[in-house]
Image (cartoon, rainbow, N blue to C red; front, side):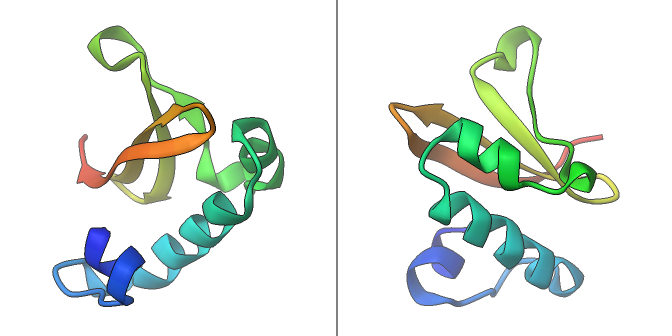
Length: 86
């Protein structure tokens, strides 16, 4: 994810997910805070806070089992990952 954000290099990301990941990142980067991101996220992204030992993290559905997960602190995104976690 770092290479995609910093260098626009999608290496090591599943090719069929690159377009959707870019769309999610665009909305995420343009949002002023989490409420703004949630407001502009299509329903299919299923943005929600995780529970249990990951209660500080958020999840955004990318496709199938793939999710973007991250933590939000003071309106900043931290620990952004693309995960196949099901």
